Image (cartoon, rainbow, N blue to C red; front, top):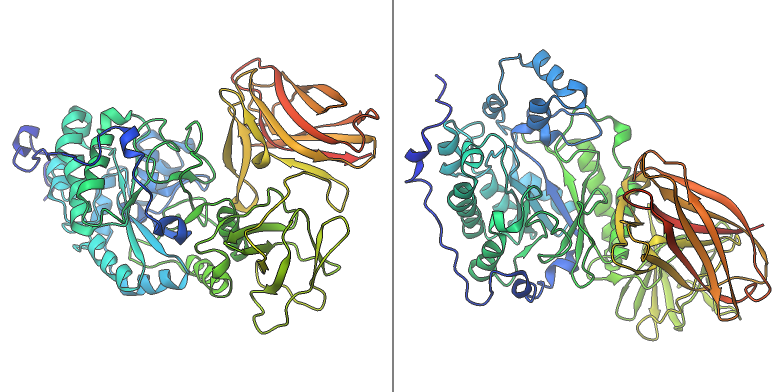
Length: 613
């Protein structure tokens, strides 16, 4: 017997009692909330596991370019050429509703202790579980969800008939990890949200959030689904002030930046990028941590349509973690369990690979800070106090690793994956470069880490120069930015690793600068620019200027053709340039500015390359 679609909203008054939001230490204003210090454990942890699990794990299907947890939305909107709707009607029938999947989400093989053992073996320090995604299905006992909809819509009332949030929280903490909870503000097909959104926020959403905070004491509260409405709609400052003052673990809890339209990167305890994107916000604060979230494949939840080649390799997973930590960030790496409660073996394999690497090299990750080098052609760096860690991606063929710009003396160098081996010899050349002798040594798996004990905190001379191949590369991540709109964005690069670019180039006053740049006395060069430009945005003009006190050289370059999208990169050039005598061999500033912006933005810029000609 099918339950009615929903009871009259007026009949829900007993269940939907408004929750008071009072604050004392913090005003419900972002200026006040931003003064709260970030708990130290979070930026030290570096690595967490995200888990997307729910009713959508039953069909576990979507276009492989996107997220399977959005199955209901793809079904409703007939998206991706009707792919999901055709799949749904062929396998479940045209009369089968999305809510009918709930009884099939049984989690019969879910063993929270086994999950916790797997997560611990990954080397992660914290876990974030989707307590409720955009479909509104709750993984914990919450009578509001079923009462509003008029049918069972929690894991305690249908399907598993268990408190999945509670069971996993207990097991994760018993394994020595911190536990966090994801929560979607908005819901699809919620009649209260559709008919009276103010009541939804006051009588449904806020009490659910308070229940989660008080019942499970999450170390991370991870809201989402905020993007269509401002923070005033969600009453976000009031909610956050309440959390900061009333959470049982208020000294430890951290929250993300997803509290209202266009707020990402500017509020909360940490900023979030997703598959390398900041979600349309203007940029990230430099005074707060950031966390990249993404799946091992293209989806967060389990997608049965994804093939082997869509998953990151073991090496790519490890290097993704290193890339982010070298920039001062955390990685929240997602796994999507199956509807019956298993973590797929390919996901376990990737987690265990990261864990094995961290067993040997974790000292170069946990509790470290961003490396002092803006450009290392062969890898990345991290630092802790007087210890500098060099993460070597490309093992030198001649056994000589060149480190440029380190002013400190190296007291000892050693390979973390070879703790019983002798120290690595380090010699400073006359030009100040350090040469680390790796001859007769074997590289480690995925990423080799050289630990350098220095005579003090790292001191690095910041300058750009050609590599051993004579090529000068000026990356977006190292640019100084001026102007009202230009900012650094994180985009997905090869292997899914985040790559920074300069975006939102919408003003003629925007500038990107690299300095100092040291070129040898070679006078003829070939310049190329790696850029992206969406269709209809091409036709702009930019100036590249090489300047010093003794002279300047400026190039006027067209931005064309379009590359396919703001995420599809191509090369402008090559352009030949002849340095005048005043610039050849001098210390320069390289500046890029817009001369003409015919549409929304000039371009996205990933890097500038100068090659000797």
